[in-house]
Image 1: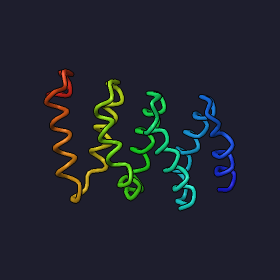
Image 2: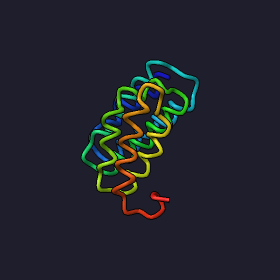
Image 3: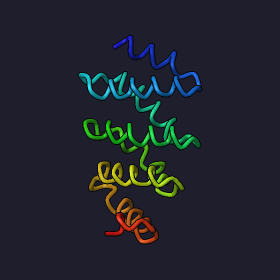
Length: 132
């Protein structure tokens, strides 16, 4: 586990290849036996990705959060508002991934706000496949 933690720290250098390595570390962390420290580190990196102005990093973040939420739903809560904002992103790929993520992170506590936001998004969407 220490190797993954060290690789993530060293690879997070602000260049594209470093982000790719961090993303692959996140994917590995999600699939191995759960380790709270690694999951927290992965969640912190995911948060930086989602909050980025770079559409590629945002896509990585939304995709990684969807993966982590599948097995560890408690990591979704802190990211709920920024994920909702991803529906407003001009990139249609990010919008579609965000819809999938919102579906996965909806709970009885947040269902009202998530469904309201999703309905508003779908009403104004021009994508014929999403509207059906």
